Image 1 (spheres, rainbow, N blue to C red):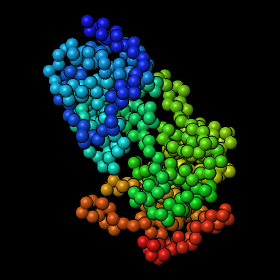
Image 2: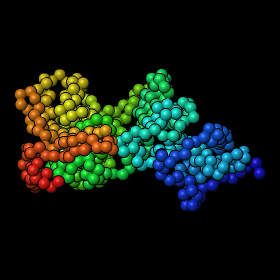
Image 3: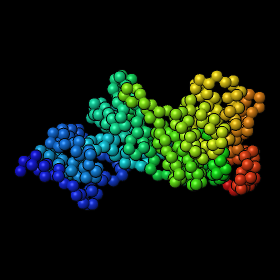
Image 4: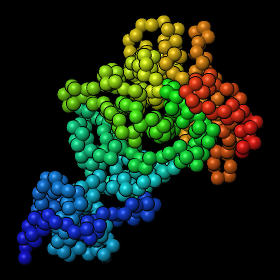
Length: 463
């Protein structure tokens, strides 16, 4: 029987047994265990892929259910391998089949990394230099693309799915994978050493406050205060550098919003995992190929005010939407939360002040700072330290204005002692002894934290 006859018999298959499906669903892979693809195996992958393109209708395959499509691709690939009499052992043949599947249905060589839940970032610096971040630390992988053209193919597949394009005339793009992971790609002529691809993984596992306490990201006392200030509808700004855990903290804090409240979330890339039943999720839209149709965060913040929200949660403020956010916080939308890139709590306020100037508002500095002091109640400052751990290093309350200065008082902080032999940062979370002004506000709402929570001596006795 000819090869094409065998393939024609394979393609009509529609019913796939559970045994067949499980056979093509790869297990979660530890990148340290990923076998290196030999040049011979890579050559066969390219050769088989070209033959598949000739004998199969890939548009039909990609429109099928993924599990069924993988069964089809596996059967046809095995037929092609038998026809070619490949001089490879059983393990190499299995790996070649898997690589061909991933090339057609996924992101090629990156698929094993996307299946590893311990990886938070995938960083591709050209076709032969791929790093991952695990537990806050970077490590190189043995995985490679066979050429820059191969990498460009995968990048183009990602951006095409979200209606974008990337080429010499538009060499930078932001996109999102189906699982919510954020993608940034930049290609020549801007990227001098070949196409560069960065993937910030979307965490499927939703962390809880107890998880963060267990990881040493914050103390039980600060966790108790965070829970109380969210329930008491204080406006919270979460600040930190890139990769410091701002979105994770925002997810955890938003988990304390009562389920009966209506929440509107606004994000550039949907990452929040709110569990409340009455949640409306909004996401910005980039301009199309003609440069039209963009919907910014500011547009969405303005629109959200007409949606009768109890709370507004903004994934991150970066520009002129900060003006509308503060106005919303000052006009009855208490309990709102957002994040911002800044290296300290004070810097976070300066950044918001600069965003006012960027938006074109010609207001006196004192008036802008007064708006900030009136809108925000608490700033949570996060930091990713050299041991890879993300920690809440400072919790500060905004007290008001003194002259032209926004006054703040630190309630809790992380006191760093040093670094041990394994490179782990040593330190402890301590209270400063200041009882926050919002303590009385919490008590009036029926939330009594107890003054001993803010007593450094009693905190030290509790360990």
